[in-house]
Length: 249
Image 1 (cartoon, helix red, strand yellow):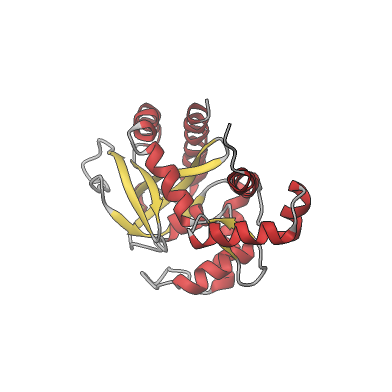
Image 2 (cartoon, helix red, strand yellow; image 1 turned 135 degrees about the horizontal axis):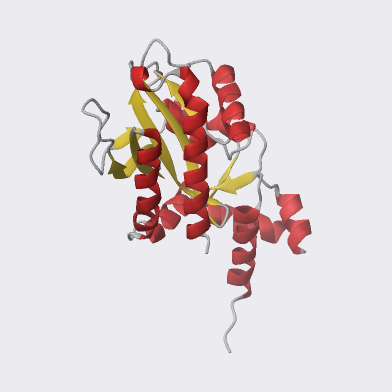
């Protein structure tokens, strides 16, 4: 039987990076997999060239790259993610009485792949296929939360923090602090930081511990007062957990 040792080793390296909850360095990967550092470096370089993994400029460690995200999303966007999520999202809309979006990240944009609208006459709406910048506050905080702070800093230095509204957070350290809070409570908030008069709450959905998308509640400030946000966030987190459990079966 034909065997390809390099392919097997490459798969082992990639699997280790994917399964890790933090960026990994060459030495740690080599030691964990009992491979030489030169072999690991060569494999990492090839994976980096394909954008399957990325190397932090500051820490010199490796983590998941954009192309791997895109591959995972193509697998799920064949209809599985939306079809599994839809009944749970419909129940979430009933619970919070606001419009809910299901979104995925594509490079530097966030794409809406499903929208379930509230029955309110005055509501937020956006058609399926709408693309928003990754720097849109609630999505930026949600999608970057699983990353290490050093990786987030590198990413935001490259992308920048646009001032969309007077409430937009453009200071890098303050924005990273916001992401730390989002990471701790498992959801992110946007208090009129992307659009004036609009508030949003978002959290990620996972398939086998891998982030594949986000669900977001959007509404006008008047219908999403500060005292209602914690309860709405709990409904959101519960919904995301149920979807993630289904995706991971």
